[in-house]
Amino acid sequence: MNALHEQAKIPVGDPQAFGAVQSAIEAAFSSGRVTGFLKAIQSAGLRVRDFEQVLRRGLLGAPAESEYTRLSNGDQGMIREFYLASLEKVAPELRGEYAKIYAYY
Image (cartoon, rainbow, N blue to C red; front, top):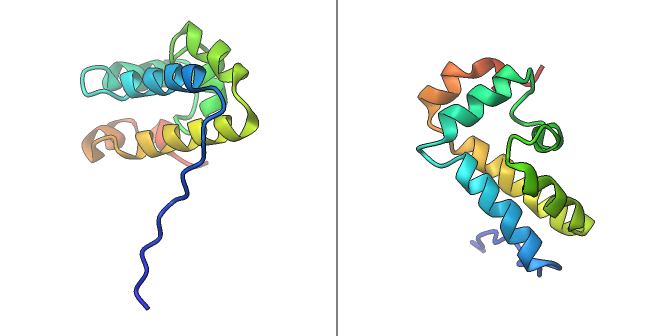
């Protein structure tokens, strides 16, 4: 048996709010803005994986936090997973440059 794992599709409860937060994350990690985003996280003294703090500090834009709070717990979980997947896609050279905010300690 050779079955591939496929993540189940979970319906989003509030597509508008979900899309707004997802778009903010995509914009932050876009090739033209990711360096500034990581620099802002570093300047704020945060870790890149601490999504809630990044959101509260407004580093994803002011509307992102209010839209995020409108989401159900399940939708918030999917957004956190999307954010964490996005930060892992950052180029290794850039991750190395910002190793301190990527560290797990």
